[in-house]
Length: 524
Image (cartoon, rainbow, N blue to C red; front, side, top):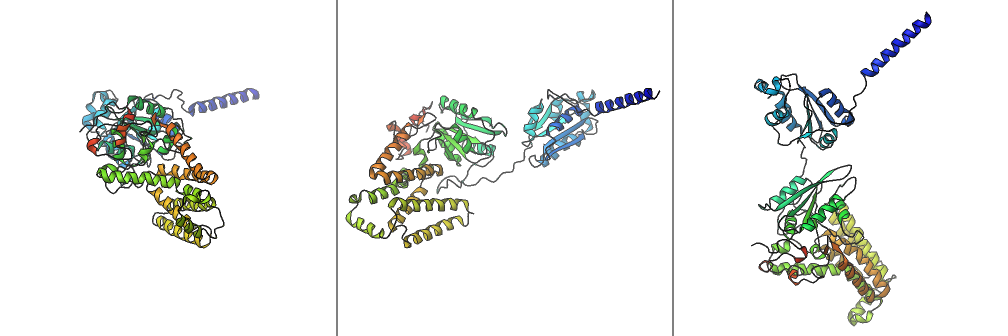
């Protein structure tokens, strides 16, 4: 009898436990598709996204009905004012009794067309059929609207626009020209391009890049000007990007360039919308990434990196002189220290006698050879330049000037370097500031040290040998199929009108031949 009772108790206990397990068994939806059952769909969304503490769930009834609904949004990314005024108010307050005559409501449900077309007063309304479509949108600022009886979840555009004002570009300041620059908001940047004039040919193609953290990327080009093969090549390289996250357009630049071993940039970066639109009018392609004010221009030539938009805003004579000045400054930046080393160490006979005597007097008591002397000063200048960039703006320039004066004066008085070396380094540093593109100045600063070692080993012959190697590299280098050294190599006389000399606009009637544009003639 006791055994029988114990068996009955165990059976009852087992049945109660099994009932509890069945009662609290979590909902599992292996397909991930929404079913229209409010409770089950909401549980599916909670299971996938509720572990994020900033995700907010708000359940309510539509109007004075019994139809249940819920919104899901991310606190801080979604605009709460927009949610309150145009979603919650529309569904809870403005849903008056007259709407109850809607045919689907008479049957006890509400149609999605009725909600979309007559209730929601918001511009961007999309639908999600699967949980994988919903989660990325919610986590980037959209609001999900779940309504009982509807198997589709609404995705409402409520992303909050936390952005800075449109300001003048810091890295490309001009005396004459537009005072606007790109921002970190992609839609603002595309709008800045549209504002340059009514143009139906401006084509913007959107991509999503990044495997784990997706971002929007836009390719811009002129449909009736750009070479279709160039556009397809850019799209192909963008689609091949395989990386978790792209925080800045510099990642895109490095992943799509032709030769990643070259010190020279094969894609131009800029903050100026006017520079981008001018490049598009030449048949080039622009790449803009959400979250950065720097757009990319491809293809690019080395001469483009030494040009400034101000060359075209001024008349052709001063524009040409300023451009020639920049080409000369680039040569001084690259070769001035190496020429000093080669003349001092190997070719003293090439220096005029009076200048040679003066240089000898300044170098009296300097214990180091010319190479060590130049390296000490060049490295000191580079450290000062880098420190000036990283310090706060109010004290950065002052530190650079004072630091340079103090270090130079102290080094001369201590007999570590000569006066003439300080002058050479100062001229070299000032010349590097004349290059309008920061990314174009960096390879010249790096190659300057290679030229100095070549001069220390072989004198002037080493400098010439380095120059020949540099020229051969530039000739072989290409940017999206366009020769990097063009229009110098290959030689195209018509493109020289906008090379080192900027001819009058009346004479620049054709677009660059190297771009193979569909329309070679500039209108007007």
